Image (cartoon, rainbow over all chains, first blue to last red; front, top):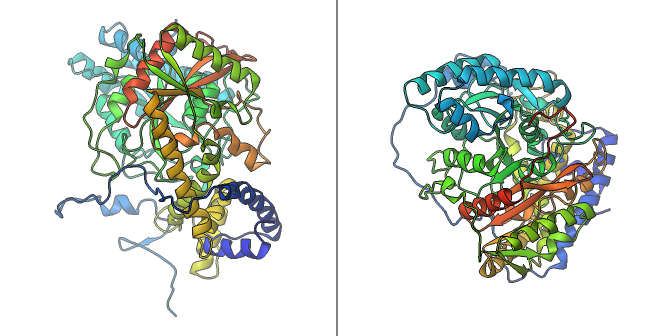
Length: 95
Length: 488
């Protein structure tokens, strides 16, 4: 196995996902298969190759810092399940 | 001849000559949708009221002599492209009730021209998949054979155009999601150069690979739609400032002396005999048209798919981290604390393939594995990009198959993620290198459409259109999908 059950559980935590014991089993097998396939990349010597994160040769795109009208608050809040006084409402995180 | 079977350029002529009104055209399409949709399942949302209202406005425009290319032309939009006031689900439970407060730039451009939006099309959840079977809501059927998939992820858009549910559609292509379904459904689909079309309002999957493009019934229509949707957008910092060409000026039959590259690597892994033979016949057509066929090689092509799955999944895991259920999207009802709220909500909202990719991407970016997976894949990306640059020193365009197979059976690959990933083997390299590519039908194999892929240099869409148009005129694809009584 390219990845262990324990690692899958750790990654799930990092990814903020929750799985049943069966799902962890299933993902361990499937991810191992995918990683075995992906490990094909190790056939290549890339020691002196520069990585390409982005294909287009543009870097920082700047604009003038001007005040412009933005979207209405109500429009932005319309998809939230919980709002109060024109704000998003979140669970209490400080005891 | 039914109104719904016409191309954009044919409809445009009827509309501009006032031989038919936009309202009549719109009603004909809405009727067609009602007729075939129970069989095809291409659409998530049908926007009948909005369409009829837009149709009346378009008729006014035509009456006032303000008609443009797409005025009154019916279109369907992939359901991962934001439409103000119209539900945009990404075929995910996570966004089942999400109604965007703004339009994607491409939608804005279509509406400015007076196009009539008929509905939103089905996709693999968050555009992750090659068959639409990963949709949380429905599996779209291939109009050529209802027991087969339409391809994906833009399978709904491809099937809708093939089944005459719209004159054209928009899709998005991250690893082949426009070209592969276009190939399987026998329509024209183009992925433009990365940066040509604004991604503002496209729900992000893999930001360095995603690009929006059209599905049309022929190459002329592809050029017309491209003219409208391209161009710099200050809302997308990766959209480039380039002069807007008129792509219809490239609709010429002459390709004498043009250098067409053929790479043996595009005819190797898993290609069906029928697909191979049909594409080879297509290459013969180019020869007969006076083009020079040049042998080229993309030695690293076989590494494109594994590199793609690392890069795309890594970007997806970071893009999909935004779904916390607070500002929009599914939220957990029962939870212990904040972290548990995130974990429960995300696990309820996302489907299996999306979770698989988030997991793969998170793993590839996690401490200790970043260099071995993510950075490695980015280095291989450089090698593939260089391969294409070298190839394009010898030729003007590259042709080959779009997909190694014709449409496969529904359910055939759902239990084997790797088998599903192989559907994109001939398309992902184009996204990795940011190149433009088109798929157009070039014949049938076992009664199912085969797509020919034409790949060009960066921003050389004009040349691709020239080559595709010349082929289309020399090798008319008149076959119609029979499964729905195809009236095309």
